[in-house]
Length: 218
Picture 1 (tube, one colour):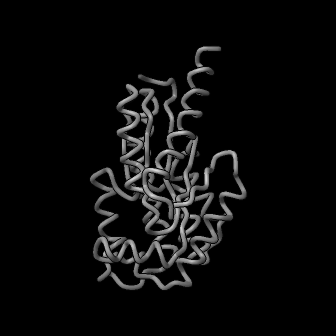
Picture 2 (cartoon, rainbow, N blue to C red; picture 1 turned 90 degrees about the horizontal axis):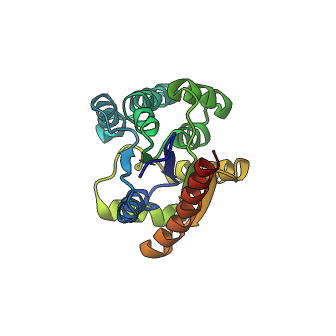
């Protein structure tokens, strides 16, 4: 099935919230209902963006200037939007993305201390003003999230930051949710994955129903 203009859904939140897992569970659910969603990750999902991802997350890279870091994330995002996201939305596809512009505001803005207002402008330039229709914030305490990540794999450069940094990032996500409640859905990621997935599905069902009814009316 297709929706004119497509639908763009993103997963955000602090480390260890289960974004990748929930994206995959939603993909399977949509497939069962006749949709063919496109799943992407940030940074990544294109040759250029994956190269930038490898650089940004390399723990051997050491310290990187905050503005350099922010611009690299936005460069990867610009390539992803132009080569994958916009064409998919134009074709009427449901696009699911693991992180997007909000992560730059939370990590490089609230986490690194860069101007959120300036980063919003850079994000708008990188994406051509593209915004998700719906964003999930999978929220959990910092310590629990980092413990999950460290138990699952090697720690990348961003995950290796101190607790104070990650607390600021989480506070940033909460501030973003409060500032734009119509787009965000805050979900307790300490719940079992299937319970989280059920909440995600309910919100997505509402969005799909509204999109289909809007198209029918026109």
